[in-house]
Amino acid sequence: MSFHDLGLEPELVRAVSDKGYDLPTPIQQKAIPAVLAGRDVLAGAQTGTGKTAGFVLPLLQKLGKSEGRQPRVLVLTPTRELAAQVAQSARDYGAHKNLRTQVIFGGVGEQPQINGLRSGCDILVATPGRLLDLANRRFADLSKVEHFVLDEADRMLDMGFIHDIRRVMQMLPPVRQNLLFSATYNDDIRTLATRLLRDPVHIEVTPRNSTVARVEQHAFRVPKDHKRHLLVHLFQQGAADEGPWGQALVFTRTKHGANRLAQQLETAGIRSAAIHGNKSQAARVKALADFKAGKVTALVATEVASRGLDIKELPQVVNYELPNVPEDYVHRIGRTARAGATGRAVSLVAPDEAGLLKDIERTMRQNVPFRDTPHFAIVQHAPDAGGERQRQQRPQHPASGQQAKRPAQAGQGRKPARPAGGRGGSWSGKPRQRAGGYRSGRM
Ligand code: AMP
Image 1 (cartoon, rainbow, N blue to C red):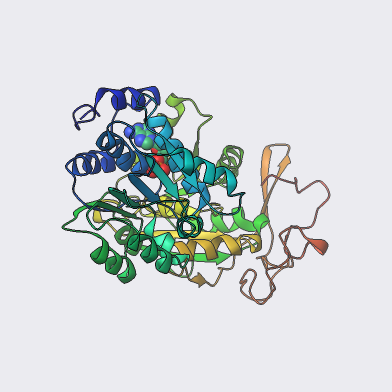
Image 2: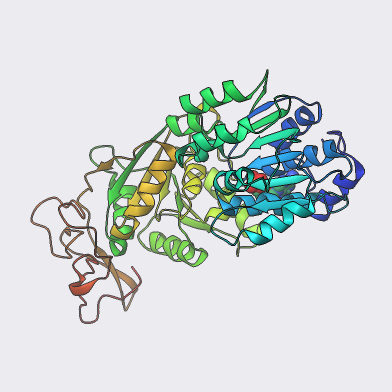
């Protein structure tokens, strides 16, 4: 199905083609015809699904020609970044139409925004606080709004905007089209949707909550420098009494990190392949085929490479490093538990990643419990006459770098304030350098 098939006019089809989009995304396929038909919409879609074009394109069409000074489309967003992004999308997708877009948000001087409103606009994209301020002072007139969009409504409620949203709604004409986009649903969103929407079309493109719910998630505390040793242990023996792991998709943050980890795992005897943006298409296809065929145990991937990876029956995903963006975590763990199956997601969390985990938990509204870090060995690979020689130390206390007298529980009982590699090396837990043995940075 093309953009043209969805009923979009040639100016808009040309604009999306200028942007290089060939096909509409699933949210666009569903939202565009519904919005064009004038329906209210309740859409469950997260960032990255193409939701912005899903509402901006049909609204540009519905506006037709530019007219009057007051906005006819109002888009409310939780953050200025999103407001700026949505406004830019409206300008890009409307490049072959003669419509005017203004964006207003707090934290910057108001005069240019007031001037913009005075000069008139068809589409107004705004964060609630500054909009109310300017509307109360009669710089913004919302009496001609025909289409109202609440973007990332769940985040707006999280940020405490519910009263501001209600106040804005009171300034709008009673008869209008309403669109509500939210990545997650809870009772507050349902209540808001009931108040706002009339006989809405329900659109759900990523059954995000249900996917997350089907994935069994837990985390291990482990200093950064020990992660690879713990991972080897998990592949070889598993945690607790579960037995050796089968296959896993392992996420790193960088391409370089993916290469290095795949190599380290190989050296430890775990068949591995890396998949990331710097690999040729042929290498990526081969890595994936080998993984699917069971020839590779660990497929080490970066975020970008993971988009579009659809591996059936993938039992587990490992977050070797936590992503900076919480949404990426949800996306990563969604690689397992596909098509209704269950799956497991294991995160290796260094002290300096504690804040990232908190953000992820807040986004999912779900905790990721810590389990006791299993007792694992630090295995050093050192070159000798015959090549790589393995030297196995006694099991290590991962947090201290000392040989353990009791099962190791990395990081527990210590303040996670000092990042790995900090003073005295107590969090780094690096094995002591040995003459002729340990090669720093390699396993
Ligand atoms: P959004 O979910 O609206 O934040 O969009 C996520 C990204 O997808 C943005 O960078 C858009 O430019 C891009 N995008 C939107 N629609 C399409 C499409 N049909 N094909 C490819 N990329 C798209």
